[in-house]
Amino acid sequence: RRWSTAPLGSLSIPGPLYSVRVLRAGFSRPGPEGSVLADGSVTLIAGGPLTVLVDTGGPWLR
Image 1 (cartoon, helix red, strand yellow):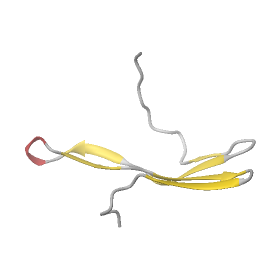
Image 2: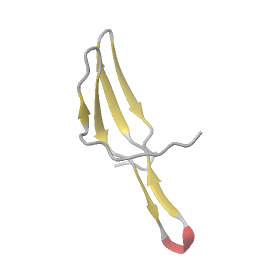
Image 3: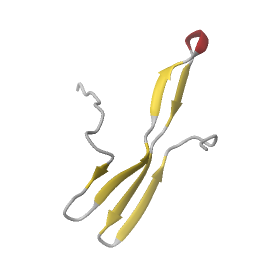
């Protein structure tokens, strides 16, 4: 199956039960000598009975 990604139109997506807010957007870009510089997103999912922080950022995140 083929899939693709696209930038979100907004860093905040309200929903009827849960809302999603990107606190820090991840990135991926070419680095020196064929390497890749990348870091994951930090996202807050809030509403309903749960509030969830999804932190896929690297340990070097400042």
